[in-house]
Image (cartoon, rainbow, N blue to C red; front, top):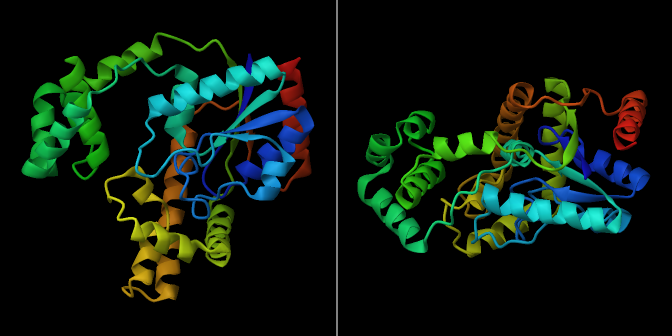
Length: 307
């Protein structure tokens, strides 16, 4: 089975390109964004609109509650199943998103880490609360020094994950990642990476967030705040969410909230640019999506890939 991947930083124009490709190649767009998968975060995640859904089939968007974290393994399993469904129906799978690790493990095959028992997850969280992040990281280093070295003490979720995996399997995360590199996927992927110039990308990110506010992002943030979502859950890290929640609480002026959210988004986009530049070997690079020739050349290469 052959599939197309559209990836790149936030605000680069991935979704619009995926829509045009889906129309041209009778494709199904499959979400590879770690926030767009959550049901309650529609606006701030930049999820497809009703018009987008009418224009082309979309899968794995808004299907999980923010209270149920979506792991790499869970997403990959759903993505592969959706790709297989596309194969059976004769549609081209178009994986679209900016979550680099989703793309990476889809390409390299995520090793089959056994399911972690709830009791171990609970024990990990209790130990984290008891020791604090720094001492918990020190404890992790005794059994999985490589993960402890790589993970910052402030990264609660990754520290917990590494500890849980070792406790459940008696093997460090690095072991499972090495296993993944030894196995490939049966699918062939054509990777299109959108990498706009930094200044252009920053401008698009700023405008995009203003559009979110106009579309109702403040009300969305207020609703999520009323749900008492734990700050440790992945959905709580949604770009702009914290700043807008602070505004709804009266802790920030709206202009300050918007400015801070835009700055946070620009910094995230910069990290994404760096990640994709060093972690992904794309088959086709688009630096200026407004250039019609770039898109037509991309379509021609996809046609050759599918032939």
